[in-house]
Length: 234
Image 1 (cartoon, rainbow, N blue to C red):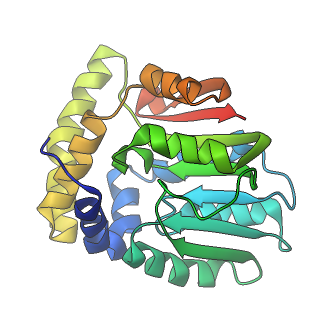
Image 2: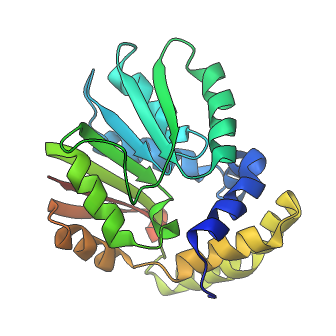
Image 3: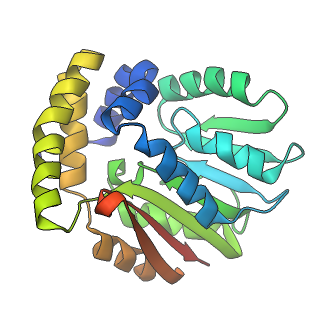
């Protein structure tokens, strides 16, 4: 994969922002919603806890998190794409009329929060898009409260050989073609394919958590390993 900088990635997501949710549902056969709900269960969010969702995009995780913390607590989302945040703001204004949330344009590499601020931090399908993964994890650790938990939901690859072959055919050829037809942007979904193919495997990401001082670092494979939930505590 050719070198892609943060500005390029931001442009890619800005282009597909309005169709991002629809295409995710189509391309994952709507399984991504199940994965998000499973990740929320791992969070074990309590009422009135402070929750931060990074690379929040269109706010799908925020929708679940607001309902977990209750109507008196503000969930904060951060993303580098203003277009994605605009779509998220419109979407959440319809689904979370009685809940509190704040969407902030910012970088995961330099979070605008003090140390020990949040009880729980989530990031769904976003870490692989960040050039410096270790810096991202370090920033999460910095703003997490002692005893708090980070949950990272990411695409990965199945380990069963026959499933791996089917997955590779779909992910490397079918997904980029369908995605480019749906968005009119071929580059975006070829980038998605390459970003997953070049991302850390499950064991490597677990090690990255441990290298950044997270305790009890573990992961759960989802849908035969197509996705995984990684988590650790401070």
